[in-house]
Image (tube, rainbow, N blue to C red; front, side, top):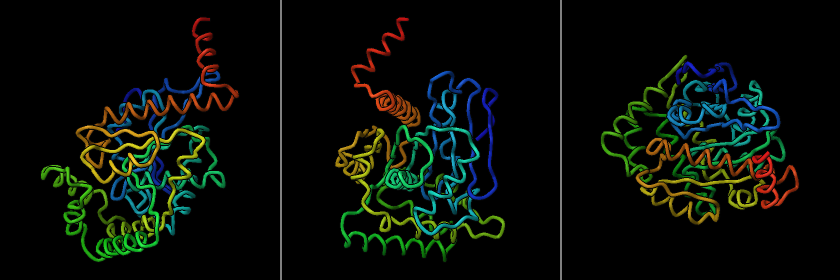
Length: 313
């Protein structure tokens, strides 16, 4: 991401995790206003850079923090044991920034990490979650047979990432069904980008680090988190692309607020960045309304009346 003239830009390159923060000089909260910070979590093989188009649309109004997950890009040297370990590293990374309220936006693996935060946040999450947008995220498997099958599937891929060059593995990775909407040109460009971002760095083997992260955060180890999402104290919205039939079914069956975006595949924020950005804005608005209701003990009708009175004053 680049330092735009109207924005304040910070990077954090020390352990535990690499992160980038962009905010406009005019987006800071004033008085009693709440300006939640948007925290973006990328998918497997991604990086903070994946969110560049979205941050461009949103950073004029909100502080945006993008994190390189363990084993990826600027955080390539970091390895984890499980989802809870990832949570701890994210918390440690965010402590350098000053904010209280947060909206979590996660894609694929990043969405599943956000779900785990929603599930465990009462125990150790230090920020007030205003909302959560989950893009192409699987809430979990419901039986041991599915978990066993997925565990074997992920182990096979982890072994390939560990033993073969990324340039040999990625062409097969992006032939999986969830990526079926990619054109040949898009697939070729994505393979080149991912190969470059996850290349060996400072003595670390990029493929092996991806392998470790995949093994630690396999869907088979996640648990079934949909009940926690359905009972969350903040708005949770699921987003998927209409060209990704597997996740259309998962999203529609979730009984959560959801959006199926036209002309988009598994990676909605890349295929339809403007629409995706507006979905984030809408979620922030819903989250702030919910937060105001909870904070002041108001019904939605009372909140609307109060807001009208303030506007007329």
